[in-house]
Length: 214
Length: 236
Image 1 (cartoon, helix red, strand yellow):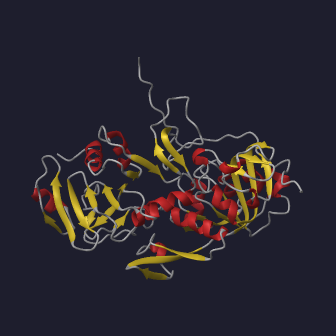
Image 2 (tube, chains in turn green, red):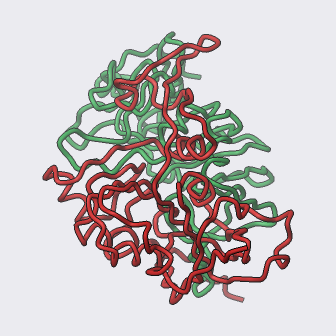
Image 3 (cartoon, one colour):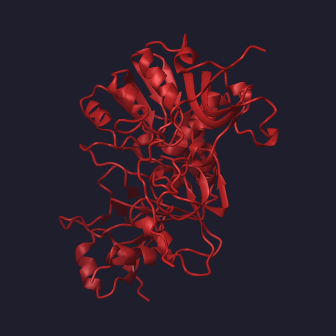
């Protein structure tokens, strides 16, 4: 049984630590905000200029001047601060954010990430993704293990244009979890989703990986 | 001291708009965009514009109005989704888009406004963004050289402004506005509320008045929300 989106988010949430400043990408990573462990203080950064992101507003209390990077209406918290986009990316590029959890289209065994464009299709732009992977101390990517066609998204080399080279530390798919060494020592399978076998991962993964299952 | 205040967008932009100029506009999505000045830019009819901003509006809103009026030739942005006209004109080759990583774009504008012609960033190294650009190693890490950006005309939106041109932004409507205010040869600001100089706390000014040459008080803000998201109230 593959993990659901919520289970993938819960697995990614296990990378959170008390006191962390964290930037969450759009899609499954956004769900991580709902599963922050009780008693843990995690401050969410939104790259459009906010630290300390609160939940969605109650109906009728939305404020057009208060949105997240996905352009959703949100709320502030007692610890919230606002700042310019330049200050926001000083936090990101300057290595002040502890963890970023992002979606992906492809990840390579050396930690390359592709998540911003597919040649031949309309390019919407990379937004802040390239800055996040270049600057944040630890990068976790959450994505499906395979394309709908069955093709592996975890690969020896990404075939899609890169968002960053050697930038991914941990890959959480719906089938398994891999640690990746940015410095080129390779990828290691460290966890299987419930009911998934090593043989299934071997059959469905194009990337080369070592195995260290606890 | 001569007044920076103009009665409306048309008069504030008078003499500043022309074909082929570069225009920067603040905002993230539709949050914090200079709604009135964008309409003024559209009504000026200036063509062949290069527009710099994080986005180019979205369907029916913001800089989309200028785009739909066939005034834009080139765009520098980090994200251009939810914009069908831009999509079709980009795919047909009628509009050029230079995609910039969001942080690189913010820093290029900040640098341009601060008189810094170029800087090095790790962002984009090893990707298509670095193609054709100088790369250099510092302390064992590779960096890409990016250049500063300036504009003929900068349009910004603030919450409050005073008669000296000092600006205060509100919540996440600040975004690119402070840097864009510094990077225009001429910067025009629109504010929701104008107050006499001396009213705003000098310690809380976000954009000092030196960066603002002209101002208007904006009218009829729509502040369109792109993705209204709410949660249910807990039942007692």
